[in-house]
Image (tube, rainbow, N blue to C red):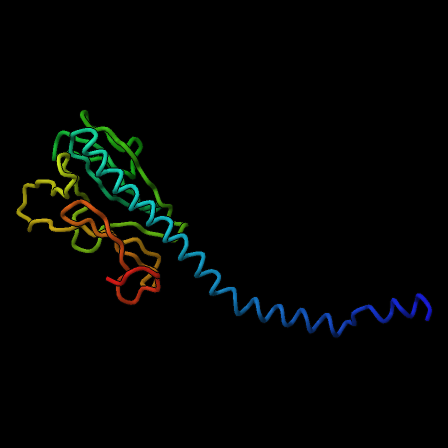
Length: 194
């Protein structure tokens, strides 16, 4: 057998190559949507994990500084955000959408996290929650910031991190100040159901 005949036997035909390309295209078309959703789920989990870590950090900072540490949420057209800071007055607060966030004397920003809108993730208080709460320095417990208007007592504080209704997590800070995470009904996130 000549060298030319051996080479001809090992080559692929154009038809075989087209069949492989069509099969790969079909597989990619089937896998791409679930792959995109997996990336979004990981992004949401990562941002929510950072939120939980920051809440634990804020609670420990209240004890370390022997001062109330406040967490305030905000948003604008470019981002959702939250600030963690110490303060002396109930009337003033840090605005995480502004630079600098804390402009009132006696306030010290400890941490600010900005989640860009183009990340598809939003981090905001759940419906009906005030935009801020604090940690009490002696016990690390959830502490409601006094206001002029009468409000029901704050027994817990829930923060929603979501992309859409099927990709959503709730982080709840209980009276003890400890955060817990759950997935509300309809969410595909693989954590404990709410």
